[in-house]
Length: 160
Image (tube, rainbow, N blue to C red):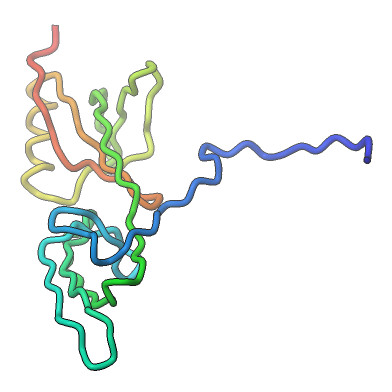
């Protein structure tokens, strides 16, 4: 036994994986899957019959949850696929800076200033217009695999 003290750098996550394995045959439409290292929402699943040598195959069509690109993958149904941990969190919008970043209020009263405005034009104009009108806005932030993006907006009435 040594008497040395060990100091570890504190990280926000506890080394948790960004994905978890799930058998390909159990992934359904509207679920999530990782295709080409991108988190995707499954929009179509088709399963082929077992061939002469055994494995049934699942054909997945998914839409990237951050950039909207369509991706496809074919996996044997008995194999495991990576499924991303997808979280949705609501934050209150405090401010929009000139360089395209938003300032958000977290539940515990801290501010979160590292998120950009969304690239989706309709959502972007809704956020900017609502903010300039002085409305109290709550944005929904979707996070998966170390990426975060604003994906929805709620109006909770005018500011007092």
